[in-house]
Image (cartoon, rainbow, N blue to C red; front, side):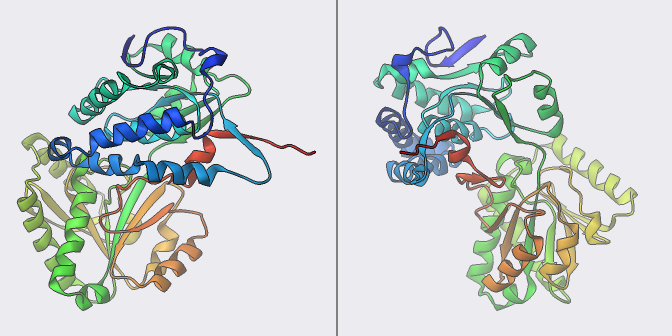
Length: 394
């Protein structure tokens, strides 16, 4: 096992190292980390880290701590938390860990050996901040990397009061083979699917600058993390009648923005994407396909239920036309996470959410916000998940 942040030693911290909810030492550490991530040099290399730095600003941290306070109970850390984040989204482990640390927990985070350079940049920043931090941070917060080692995973699972598992269904099932203590529990983030919708009426009513801005937001939502993030949109629903003009202009703008932003799809992924697209067509789900560039593949779905829930490839977008948002309700289920949108009124979106009734879709956000992490994620209020309550009756 190799520790990449924090000192080595016994995983069970002594009582002198107990943290509190909103511990000032943790807030100070996270605020200094935010400044590192918001530095211009870091932002130029990894623009996605800017959102993370913004999330860790002192004002946001204090707002989260205030949210945790209650009049009917005392709020305490949950205890020991073992985080197992995915390899395909380099920043998610920091959000999960930071909220847990802010709640006063002792944390161990397993960093995937397949994590990319953004993760290394974050770990470098963590170690730089750690050098001047209160020593309790290094004793209670650990980032580690190890290979496939069931003994280590089993030991950490037995240590944990809460185990946080990010990844596909198979990853969740594999980790769950390692039992927890009877008093502990899992918080899981399994396979999810996300969608996008464009109001044809709203698109036509928007000026060219707004349309371009919408496509830019959609591009950021889609191409960061090669469209593999759980909140990246896959199928695009065109809502209205006779939407061919909307689809044509949307794809034209998408091609322009992708090219200007410098997004690229390597040859191997482009081939895989084409194979997957033809495989979808072979099932009868797709009536036509367009390959205007390696970066963009557009497909026409025969019906809404044919919308694929699996990843096809970066820049692969099935399109389907529906008369209203409410027509999509029967096709949504608990696997669905983020529904990004453009051109709809608040009444339409609210009616859609109410009709879903919590049976599917956890987030409804405008284009450009699909990847913006929030403390409420996948329907969980994460800061509160990381705490426990004690009632006191005098």
